[in-house]
Length: 134
Image 1 (cartoon, rainbow, N blue to C red):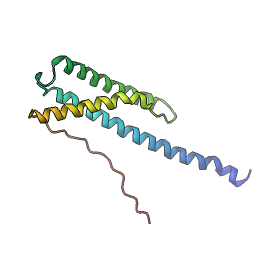
Image 2: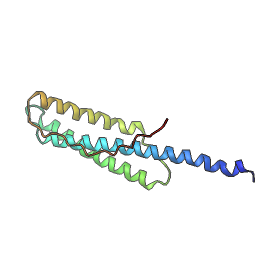
Image 3: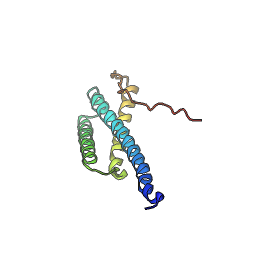
Image 4: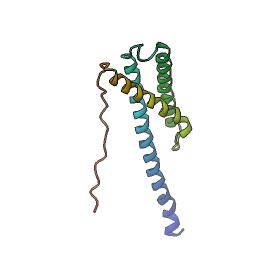
């Protein structure tokens, strides 16, 4: 067995491991953002007067936010149950993006209307140490 063939699979496994780790980190960060904004949306709905957003619309938005939070839990569970790296389809996340934009719009509406709302408290995010390269 030559030296190059013995080290070949090892060389290929390392970049795959790094890309899998990057994918996991990116998706976890994305899931955290969605969870934050969906929970924030639920909190904003608690402060939304019916004159600004009718009760039926509030109910639909609340249902959508709760359903999206459950879908994120399910997506994370599926990903962790799988032994190989797995992405999430962009089409599956598109409704989450639209829902997040609805939360942003609700927040803007509340602020413009002068409705007092609690400040959002984002959890601390681990930031990688800057590399000390050349």
